[in-house]
Length: 251
Picture 1 (cartoon, one colour):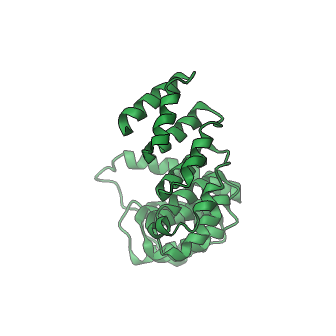
Picture 2: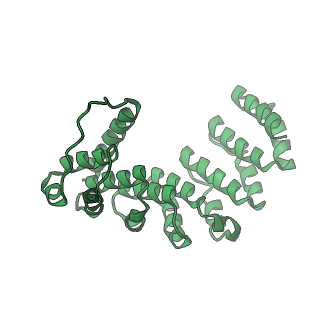
Picture 3: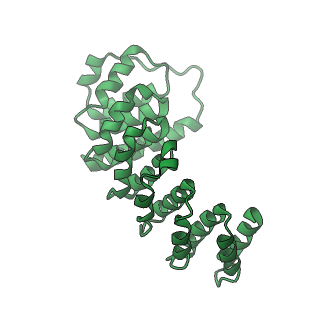
């Protein structure tokens, strides 16, 4: 079922992207609206298809009832599409249900629920659940968790989870590493700068080093400036170019 949810999500995302780029014909027929009872009789593919039409046409009261039913469905594929509908339509009334799905056993469901929380935001009570997902087994979830963490403005001053983020600097996935760097810079705490500076000497690739360089440059510290100057003599052409560009932009 998890595999099926992932496939459905990917296919629907591709379809939605294509449909957004292609204008609807003015004479296109309006999709027929259905009631909740009828929706419940459909198989999961048809349910997913109907949820997708809701994002493109005017909603009615029955559509909200259908979304509410879909987000509690037994099939994770239907839940994922329901979350995508909530996200695209910015239906903050469904935020509590999305928050409850942060603990789902299905990876795609956890990820999509996080995207809803990231987009619609919520109170600080949700932050511990978000931070917990920075240690998720799936990198997509970890990446989204760090981005979502930065939506909680009070945390930037409180720094309750600053060291939790800092101690994750041994992360291996480059996309997640980038979000960790950005989160540390977001905290604007000088405690992090030596750790990021040290990481710049132990990066596994030029692309990761460039990520570190960009975030260090945003700190505008003297140490970052000196480090960038040394990197203008790097053996890597792209590192030298990036170092010179960052020096011009930030210093």
